[in-house]
Image (cartoon, rainbow, N blue to C red; front, side, top):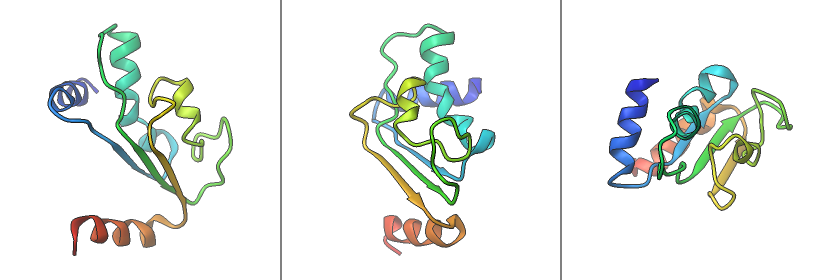
Length: 107
């Protein structure tokens, strides 16, 4: 986590950084926790929140669900701001992710 924190701190000093999450659960949620850790645990000031959030998940979204928490729930955890662009795609990531990455990369 400390390597991720250093990387995030260095990169976001120069440019905003968004978060693209595939699926959920602890493994999917671990890296997005770097922002609240920097704010709350290390008490760093002026750490930017994630610039955007997009999640692909086939889990039913609900408040309190670890695999399918709605993006707005991440606001209360200090991961996203209320005005952060948030997107959730409810589908099979093995189908959707390659299509999205091909489009984003211009393939």
